[in-house]
Amino acid sequence: MKCVICGSEIKEKEVWEEVRENNNHLLVKVKAEVCLNCGERYYASGVVDKLVDLKENLRKRHLKLHEIGKVYELIKSSKS
Image (tube, rainbow, N blue to C red):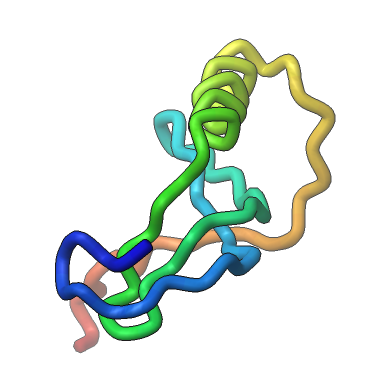
C-alpha cells in the first residue's frame, strides 16, 4: 500500500495517539500504518473503535488511570 497523500511507502509502527475529553488527555500506544515521508497515519477499524470507546469511558470516568504529569497554562503577569 502507498500513501494516498504523497504516494510514498508506509510501514507499520507503534505510535502514541492522544484521546481528549474536555481538559483530560489520555495517551494510548496503538499500531498504525505510517507514511515514511509525510507521516500520514492509517488505522485498522478495530483501533479506531478502541479509541472511540476509550474517549467515551474517559468522559464517564470509567478508566483506572495513572497520572504521569501535569499541564500548566502560563498566565501573563504584569511584571513582563
